[in-house]
Length: 222
Image (cartoon, rainbow, N blue to C red; front, side, top):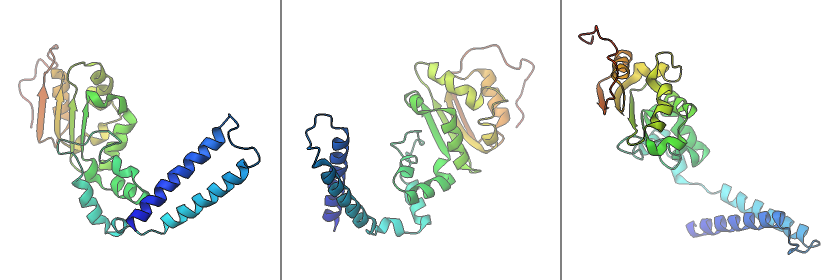
């Protein structure tokens, strides 16, 4: 059965390739008279194969949602999930409709986010907002690892925590329990500590020099 499924899927890909080639061909390699009939037969075969594949019952899609969620949790990187469509949890939402529903409705899958310089091309404010919206009210862990060049870091940081009026991340500060970052100023470090009441673990690396943000403060309230 498994080999037959593979054969059908390979044939389906081949048919789609042939149809695309016939539709875009400009060299008249295909006879004008025979081309419509050939396309009709290929489309009929495609429909037949797709119906056969749709009738296949995959056991993995019929296990309880709770078990599927636990399996998904074990797919997450141990050092924090990255905003990469090729990795969990984003990858899990691209497999099928059921998996997308399970992945997008389990807050635990979105409770940690690691953004680095290498992820910058895939990161935008909307993605970050959607990510933490899916996390709901679970404790959050955020790791900003921008080593080397700082231009990418400064592009995203205002959306995350550079100013108290930022609307992107303000709704989630109360849920932040773990934070790790590079290249913050003392003012930004102090501001984060004041705005994250549930923060348990916090690490700042390579703090940049700046004018003391609050020169009259001698202690930080806990």
